[in-house]
Amino acid sequence: MKYFRTIVTLAALCGSSTAFAPRSRAETNAALLKSNSMEGQWRRYAVENESTRTAVEERDEIMQEASEKLQNVGWALPTDGDLTSEDPFVQAIDAGIQRDVGVSLDELLNPAKVVNLERDLFELRQELASCTGAQVVDTQFATTEECDGGGGGADADLLREKIAKKERDLAMERRSVFRGWLKNVFLVQAVLSFGISYVMATNPSSLFGGFGWFYVYNMDISIQVLGYWWWWLFVVPSLRSRRPKGLEKKALDWAFLGTPLVSILAPVATKDTGLIWGANLAVVLGCYAAAFLIPEGDGGDDDDDDADTPEWLKFVYKSLDFGSGRERGARS
Image 1 (cartoon, rainbow, N blue to C red):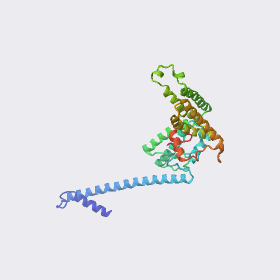
Image 2: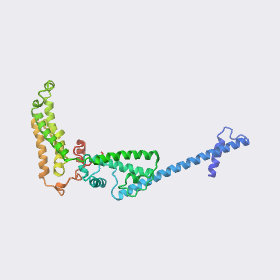
Image 3: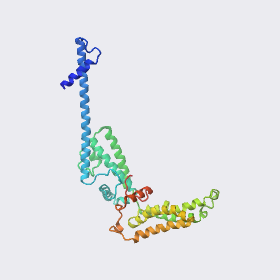
Image 4: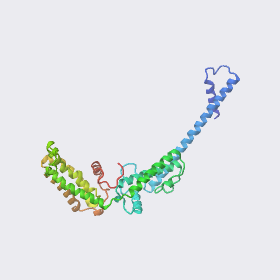
């Protein structure tokens, strides 16, 4: 500090163009006061900088310690990819819903949203604990109250508002159960789509012949093409929306991939839209037959896990599927 004072004093003295000219006592005292002021500013800057650096280091240490504890128990959130039913995070959510609501995670109306909300709340509570200096013992199942040490300023208040909003959304989603009557609605929708699509593909004039635009714009071919595409657009998705499990789920997954391929390739061999519609029907029935007749491995009928599905096939499912067959997902 002695050398620092000397440097600052010399800098103050050299700040004027007459630094080396003879000075009066008043000028010398003014220069010394200026050097003392500069020294005080530098000291305050150093103290503030050190305090900020210390706070950041303490926060990083707290977050690192929490992450290490979660990794030790196998409960750390994945940094990339999707959460699966085998992930401890999802299993903990499933156990909590069964305890509080009496149903499993898959029986909720929107299980993917529940998982995403739980993950967001977990991360926000971690931030709140770090911001308020709360010492959380059980980081796995800590509540908002346990993660809130009080204070924290405007940043902590903003976190509390976000947490409160997501907790309200989560409470509503946890009560939204996928009821049996809703499955029946999707089944009726699939049956109606089946019948309507056949008429559209074979004789669209029986449905739309009474409308003038049908003949004015020559819509017969367009509606016939839409009729056999109806398998992929409505029939199979309606069946998958019932959230079947086991072998039926596998059959519908295959059908969801097979029907668009037939609808694209079949017109090369025939222009008969009725035959193409029948080819889609044959593909769906064939998928059911293959799923139920081909011997299973160790999983059997209760195997409802996608862990053995190849990564490339998962990518294809996610690229084609916009929600009807995604049961547990996390965000993409």
